[in-house]
Amino acid sequence: METKSTGPSRPRTILQHEDGVTFDQVYAKYWKPLLQTAFRILKDEQAAEDIVQDTFIKLWEHWNMPHTNIKGWLFTTSYHLVLKKLKQLQSVERIGLANFSEPLAGEADELIQASQLQFAVEACVDDLPKQCRRVYTMSRHEKLSIKHIALELGISQKTVEYHISTALRRIRQRISGAILILLYLFL
Image (tube, rainbow, N blue to C red; front, side, top):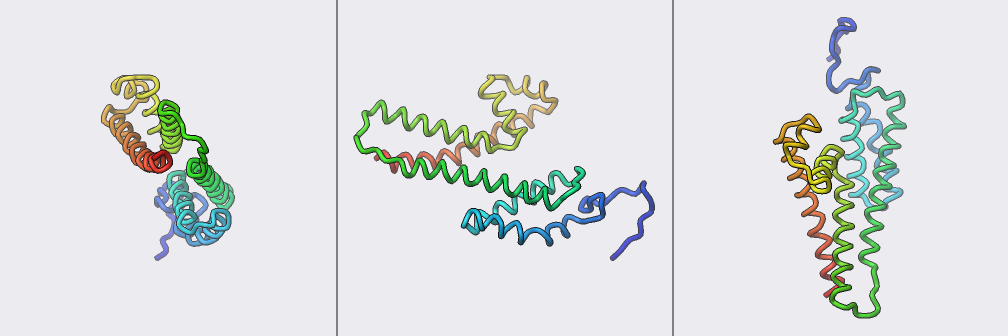
């Protein structure tokens, strides 16, 4: 169903970009080429689908920003997400391929486990959304109170609490996998 424009004062629909193209049209046109490109690099269909999904989520979040070249933006964003995924896979491989030919002393063993666990936590924090990462860093690294963080960022204390609990939940999820790998390697 087409509607006629009533002039510049009429607000755009949330799905329509300023140049008249809708989000659905962009999705229909580019999802398959993005998927093929990501799959060609990752050789993992599920990971490629996740990359394409994340790319379109980022597009949705930035839809109202002016895009002079949506295709270029999509492929660049997808490419950066693929590189991020490859970096994650590479670090997991390094942990899995670690070969310890000599038995390690208990203290050295614990130091290695602690450093690998710290690496997993830092990687998870790096993957957090920008605002969530900022709140978590202010809370845990800078040791600021919830009230102080809320005042500094101009958000409510409940929002600060939400970001901290989200960050901690994601870290717990990531660490549980890392702990299992570490237990397997060292037991």
